[in-house]
Length: 143
Image: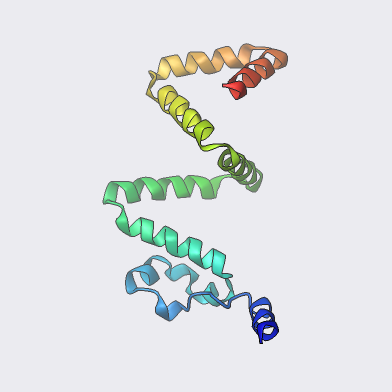
């Protein structure tokens, strides 16, 4: 009996996938562009899309506008750049939570700097030799 169950689960990649008709009307409206391909998606992809739709429904208009703009920028990136950024996100998520928090604080602090200061820091970093930049990156990793 166990063997039959395992075989059925293994053969059916959509064994636990959501049926389009079981989605709420609000979720269907947001994901409407995926309706024709919905059944071909594995359950993991469906879950990610459903989760994103639920987040979208909790956002106010300004947040939705901001997210739409970010998504459009993402879509305009060349595939190589998107792959690079996806890899960096994976690396970030593999870091210990404490290190992730520290990086978030550092980025937040940098974003709060005046534009001129940020530009000066970028220029200073770019003017360093590759060896100097490597040393700085290594010191930052140790923090």
